[in-house]
Amino acid sequence: MHGLNMLLSGEEIKRKLNETILIEPFDESRINPNSYNLTLHHELLVYEEVILDAATPNRYRRLEIPAEGITLQPGLLYLGRTVEHTETKDTAPMIKGRSSLGRLGLFINPGGSLGDVGYCGTWTLEMHCVQPVRIYANMQICQIYYLQVQGECGDYGPGKYQNSSDIQPSLMYRELGGEDHDGQMELNFDELLHESR
Image 1 (cartoon, rainbow, N blue to C red):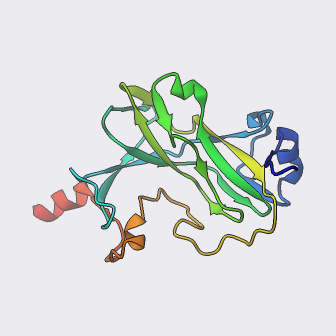
Image 2 (image 1 turned 30 degrees about the horizontal axis):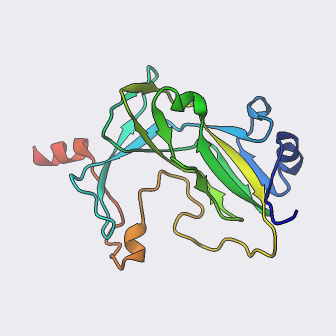
C-alpha cells in the first residue's frame, strides 16, 4: 500500500457486510461509490449551561423532532445520533456530514469523526448552523466510510463511547479527573414543573 490507507468502495462495503462490517438497519439504496448514508434519530440534546466546562458534566435537555421537522438556530450546539448501529472489525470507520447539508449552512461533525477499529454502537452527531435550518427525523444526515488500516492493530477496548445506543454528551471530564456523580445531568422540565406544584 506504500504507506497509504485504502478507502473501501461501496461494493467492498457490501461484500464485507455481516462479516467484518455491520450496519443495522441496512438499506442498499444508500450505498455510494465509496461510502454509505446514515440517518438521523428523532431526538436531539442541547446543553443548558451558559459556559460549558470540559472538567465537569454539563446539564442538558432533550428535544423531540416532530413529523414536521425542527428548526435549528445559530449559536447553539445540537447533539444528535444516527439511527444505525455500526460495528467494524478490520477497518477504521469515519463519518462526515453530507455536502448537500453543508450547502444549507448546516455543519455536522466538522472535520469528520474518526472511529477506532472495533468501535461498536451508534454515532453521536455534533451539529451547528449559520442560519436557521429545518431538519427532519430519518433524513440522510451523514456518510460513513471505511479506511483499511496498515500494520497490526488491536481491537478497540471498553472506551468511553463504546457500545453507545444513545446520544453521548462529552465525557472529557473523566480525562480531567472530574467525578461522574450521576453522569451527565439531564433536565426534565415536565418533571420539575410537576414537583413544584
